[in-house]
Length: 343
Image 1 (cartoon, one colour):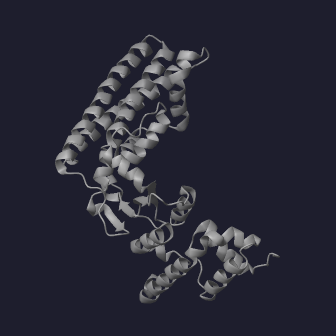
Image 2 (tube, rainbow, N blue to C red):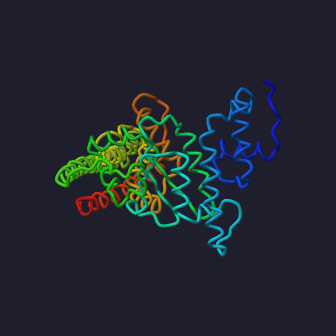
């Protein structure tokens, strides 16, 4: 079949569906045209590329129709383009659920202490979902515009159930009914009895406190080698101090599923997800740039197995100051968990 040439308007509309997932489609006539092209030109270059989004066409138009009604009922809120969806939390949720078809959406904003307009969502896809996380991320990222920012975690239902079954108190605490803002079947997530939660919190606190104590001991070793100008050994001690503290924090929060990593940069990424209040508090008070984190990570292997590792006394003192602040913030965070997560 000879590929047909689509009009610029239709081609752009289809590109928006597939690549950007944005609700720019505002011509009701395109609904029928889209379906006709996708069905009749299934072997052509356009049909082959767009056929997988055929079931989404009606959903996109229905979503835009809803946005139009919102504009008509609130003329004072008229804004350009598709920005209406960003100003209405229900519309944001509707856009995500219509396109991604999740099992649940959990709002972590309150738990993590994020202030509006930033939102932090955990989007749980069906275990059988074949949607790629890359495409799903693109869908959500279209909503990050203006003064609205959305952080999000994507995972499958079976993965979430595994985290909960392993005793990940982060997920157990997050998936309480007040935080669930969407459920496809009006069902509750796997709930854990309060007695079991208390037991798991105690276990998590033990793991975190062990990491904290080990971290303090390694930092003392770093001071010893720094004073003696044994900079390479001091660098290794600093790395171990940071690693054991961060790793045990993440292990405690996830029930031992995540966190088994040596990279401080990677562990900080885990910390940003599972302990955002700690992460942001640390970042505001003593920021460590990527270069310093990479230098700290290099010490883990290079001090032991290479002869050309080099670090200055000033760089070491910066790392020591950062780890010392990390210990202080982590100690406060552990107390926060002990005081609040049992409620």
